[in-house]
Image (tube, rainbow, N blue to C red; front, side):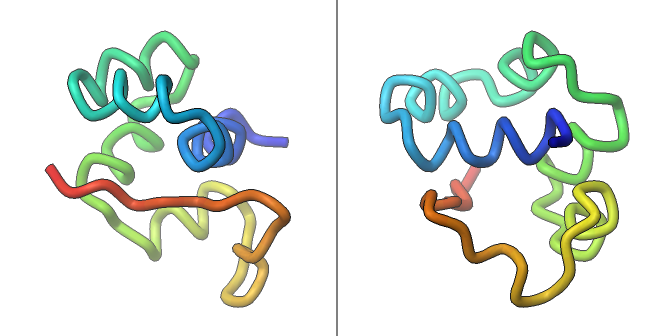
Length: 72
């Protein structure tokens, strides 16, 4: 599993982690080991890039985890 997808799943399932992300999204992503293009896609909320970087296609984002998108 990609580090980006792991991060997205953790954001949806761990409220404390999500709160930390809200305060310092880039710092959290750097500590999670995301590449520059992954971090930028998340900061830009670029759905097309996120799909390409995770390897997921439309309809494959449904998992047994909630994946949330946070406003800046």
